[in-house]
Image (cartoon, rainbow, N blue to C red; front, side, top):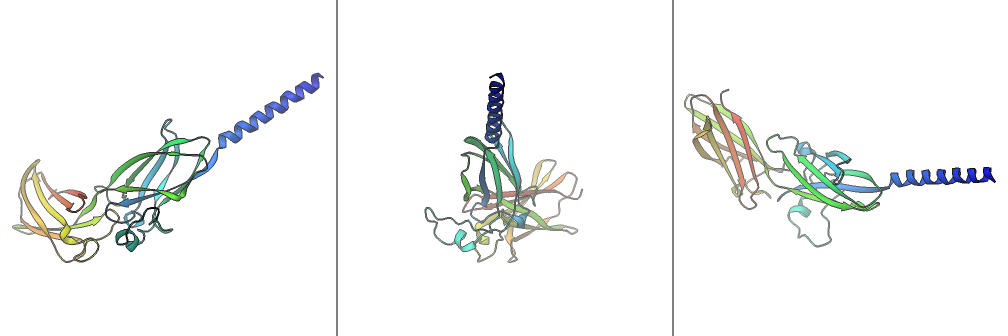
Length: 251
């Protein structure tokens, strides 16, 4: 009888251990994350993607991470066709990050997105939280986030004896370009150059669209002295998307 009770206890202990291991493993929970630029397309490989972390909101435990990569998606579906309730504009090739999380109970997760990685000064950060249920499918019904801003860069700087010619390159966060008659029209943007000296504004002027894709230019009187900083400011009038690029002059 003693042997039987000992065996019984061993079997129960084994079953309990198996139960705990199974419970610890949880269920595979699919999560696909996409980020769309405001008034534009999905942000992906064209601008070196975005970096994503997913954490348990309560414990801070890292559940998954990676880079959003891929294409910008279907232009007509995203920019021209009416958006109907229940209709997804997400295509298989649209830039995304697919994760499989191991959840053993309903979990509130925090998703943190940083990018685009191609532009240090155009990089934005977005954080959101949501509940996920074990085994829930958030791959076929993905999480789509929206990121505000513009990419602004100094495309050319030519210094003459008395002048400073400045050319800026402005684009949507997805890398989508600006043109005279395209989906992103040049006259919807205001671009300015501001020159600071030791923190004081000493000159500014608007840049005009050159006719070349995403390029705006102006020629300023050449500033003199030390501590000069050129700031390029861009604003999309219809949406409020904005971006800034700063560079030191004549270091």
